[in-house]
Length: 190
Image (cartoon, rainbow, N blue to C red; front, side):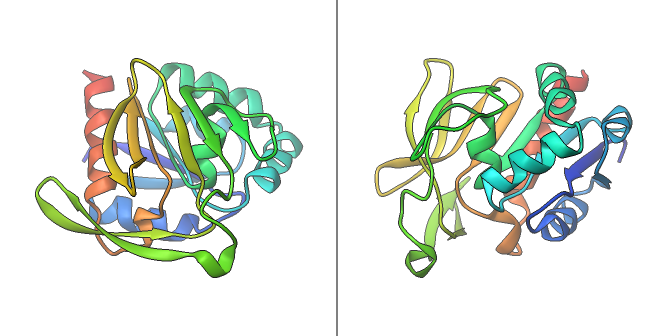
């Protein structure tokens, strides 16, 4: 268990991500300042509200350090984290970390009332996917691999060392998506 994973702990349900990562076998720390990035092998950016996260990343002087971290090491973004990793954001357009070749539309499934749980299949087994004011990935670049779709839209994709989910795998009690990320961290270390 040599992997140390950081969870961006500025906003969102970072505690649920910590539990899922620990269940998958990782050692986990909260990331609240740039120096915390020096101690980790991979970073999870949780769901929450992407514009609030952007504001907090700037206030805590984390925007550039997180972008630089992601240029070197694996990052996993869920929901708002997926928005922040995309290089193009719609509805409305906003700044991002631009670490993945994706176009993501914010709140594309609808309002909070339109949130849902979908039954998908991952690695041949059922997977409960919780969508809360979820974004839709509208475009994937040539080197982006789609791992899961829902209603014809990519909902779990990877590009190089990075992974994004437009749903909340941390809320399902199933740590397989987090395990996929930990395998990416292992690959990046070897």
